[in-house]
Amino acid sequence: MITHQEVNLLTNYTAREGVAISFFLNTDGSERNKGMWDIETKDMLKNARKELENLNVNRKYLEAAEENLKRIQKFISMENLAPKYKSVAIFVNSVENFYQIYWLPVPVKSRLVIDKNFYVRPLLALLEEHFRIGIILVDSRNARLFEAYMGEMLEHLDFAAKTKNPKKPLLETFMKREKRLMQKKVEETRFHLSSVAGLLKTHFACRHFDKLIIGAHKPIGDHLARLLHRKLHDNLIGIFEIDIHAKENDILLKALAAEREFELEEENKLLRKISNEIEKDGYAVKGIKSVIEAEHDYNIHTLAVAEDFSQLGLVCPQCGMPHFEGKTCTCCGEELVQVSDVVYDIVEEAARQGATVQHIRGEYLIPSLGNVAAMTKFKKGELVRTEEAAETEA
Ligand SMILES: [Zn+2]
Image (cartoon, rainbow, N blue to C red; front, side, top):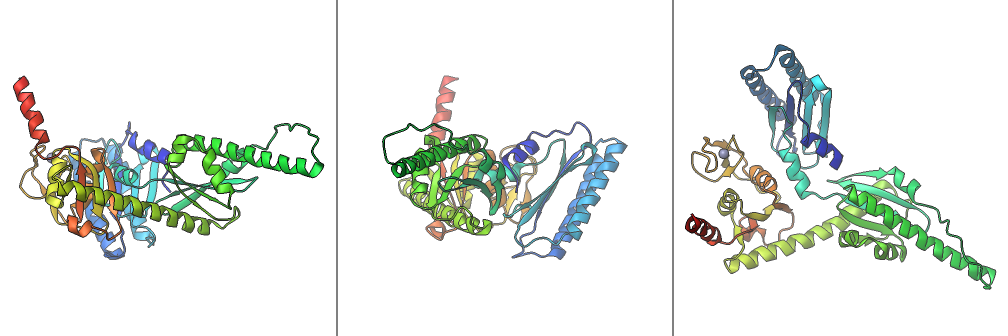
């Protein structure tokens, strides 16, 4: 599972020596097969070798790059590409001992990029869309924290150890012994839960998760929810019944169901909002042509796209801007190239511009919106008026 820290490391990486090779292969089994992946990989490597020849790199780095390309080819031809995953990403620069493989449960566009930096644009688009979920399991004395991301899960084993044991001395009272014990138990539970809430706040700040789900028996779960830090409470998306010793797979299934329910609600909210705006010619556009135009204007606030939607299109090889028609890029003038699925480029560009991206899995409304639609930052005409104002100023 790729962590937030690892993505940061990749994003900030610059090769001081050698070249950074970023390789993405779409291994989505539903429409493709291993033979195709091998051929596609070979083609990408061939182009990469040509590119390396044209680049002005010294012999030592060139040899290292060739080794890296061979390593990628070997990996792809040997690997029994797990059907659970839909793409694989490899980042390599052997001169600086960098080699990372990530299996991704979502499809990305196949490509190979040679540069001083790693090409992380598809990863950032993924990050933008998929949130990490913290799953906290609690009972009156123990706690376990899991991090789930794009269908995978890991346990933060240090969490259980860090929850403090109650040390607070209790006041002696005249109550009967049993009553006193009962009160002690209640206080200990409250102390335990508030210490769990405190620890969760720290993990949230480290970006171990963006949304939280609580798994506990009643009423412990509700108690913990009330003790959460306000910001964390705002990101609580569900509470479910589960035993603290439950198997990992059962925990993941319950968490995914809670996440799905939350997402469906969010999807419906967004699509209703877009439809309302379109009806009154407000802050939304629908259909691939209008959405691409809005991207050219840096005018996407939130992008909604049907999960299985794909469409032929054009893209600028220089700046990556998707196009619906034309010969040259409207942004940088470079000659456009055809791509079999321009939707990937629309998603990546939206993420690059800082828009929120939401893939719509439910059926609701998306066909009537042309399978892709967006909330915009400006409505039609607003941008023109801004430019007129600037001209008057001049
Ligand atoms: Zn361009």
